[in-house]
Length: 79
Image (tube, rainbow, N blue to C red):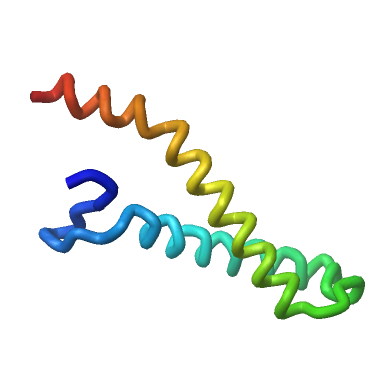
């Protein structure tokens, strides 16, 4: 099955683990930005957080697409 991740027998779309990872990264980045006081310069914090989440998700999906051929070749040599 292409485009799915097997998690203990449950098939999830490949974007779901990436979305969860982006959410975890967002929590960390938001905390660092809040500690630095960067939110004082942001006009709309909720809109900024949403844009930051979309950028993190896009970056993770780009990295996963670039790493996909290497991972697939690793699994094909294991058989």
